Structure formats: structure tokens, C-alpha cells
Length: 147
Image (cartoon, rainbow, N blue to C red):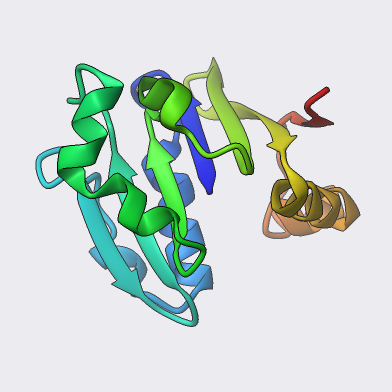
């Protein structure tokens, strides 16, 4: 579970596009699912792209079939994940995105649980150059483990 949090235009959908492309789904097919709320993509692993922007209460997640995607068979990337409240799974990688300037973003990753710990360790092992796709970047990379 990737819990994506950030203001409008912070890069949440762009991050999911990159993730989907890395999993073998066509990148151009990935759009913000604001009106559908959940899009499914098939690649090497199934990806559920969830947008909770229009959710008014965590109770609405039951109507979306939220729990069906949290069974361990899906990679779930949820935009506006903070709207899920206590219904977020305990094991998740929280990624907070924010604007640093009109053209740059900062990401802060926090692991909650053992699978998220493993993902965070893999992110730490990647060089900043590889994370940036070998292009020069001014992005800040903050990675931490939840206490």
C-alpha cells in the first residue's frame, strides 16, 4: 500500500504513472481516477490506482470495495490517502509530496509495518541518480521509518 498525500498538483498522479509504467502497464493510460475513484491496471503485478479526493468520510470506503484491494494481491496506490483515516492499513508506505518550486517537488517517505520497511530499505539502497532517472535534479529525498 502506497499512501500518497499532497496538495493539488504535487505529483501524486505522476508518481502513479511512473509506478504503472515500471510494472508494465501503458503509462499514457494512467489518469487521475477522480470520477471513477478506482482504476485497475495489469502489468507484472496488478495495480489499483485509488483517488479519495471526493470521499467525505472513511465510511464511504466500504461502498468502494476498498477492503477487496487490501488482500495482499494488489499494489494499491491511493491518492489523498489521508481521507481514509483509520481505514488505512497498518502496513503502508506513506509518501508525502509537496511543491518546492513551480517545477520541483519534495517527497517524504515514512514506513509503517514490515512490508513498508522492506520497500523503504530498497529506496534507501537506490542512488539519488538512479531515483532521478539519471537526469540532474534538485529534488529532496527524505526517507524515514515511523516510530
